[in-house]
Length: 329
Image 1: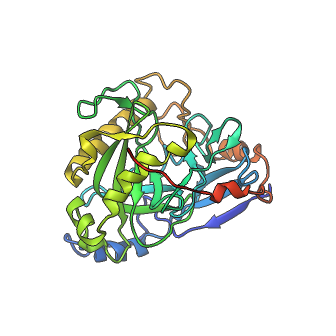
Image 2: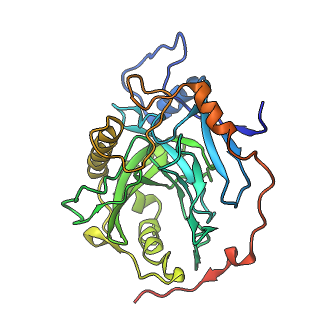
Image 3: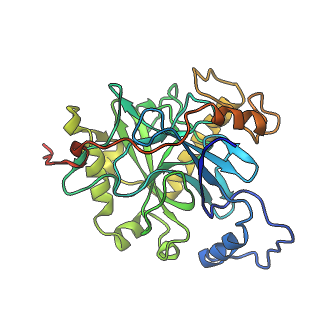
């Protein structure tokens, strides 16, 4: 066995336990939570490699059979009828290490973004420290950089669609949450459409009461405004201009967001089915039957083994915690 640190989570997969019986056709989200507790037979876990805060640090995702790609193998939806989605957490709330699913490496591990040869940390813009939500992405989605969006007037950013999870719990890096989508805002980031879905963990105590963006303002007053401001100013300390939003920063409804998800899921299908040029994006997966990119679990294990072993983290410079005081024009 190669040296590794596996952190097991009670993450839900996409299979029903044996002898599982659904006794009702109409479930509340409390009922869904009870269902999820019965579905813990297929947990996801993480495998850390390299040195945290170093350029070689990677987080690989496993199911019970071995490595999977968080981009391609984790299903987009847990329950299509109830519109419950899987979300991969990249950046836990209150942290500023810029982690992301890497598009061009085999198995698409989560790694820290690199800027000018150094691992990237997002600036802390007063009064915020790091991200103000659990930040991540929906699997099996892709914002096509060749598609010009009618609503935003810009093309996609070439990444899976981003998610802002607003529940009370600080999630873990690499965790797979089950969320319901409440709406979306449309960031224009350096000329690219960068949708930000607003969602809540269905296990959150508030989840039953929150179903759309109007409920967010009612139960989390000020959060939508703070979210728009956060994205407007977060790159200013790095010398970049203020970001802008389509629709004047207005948060669109859950129904609107679901249509965007359908669209970016369809784009992902064209990617995995080789209908478009991937342009370096790794489509390697371990679970998609019939895919030309499917890899055996043993081959996937070898991919992980060849990466540097997990060791102590790199020291952090104090500047990482600096507060930046930014004023919008």
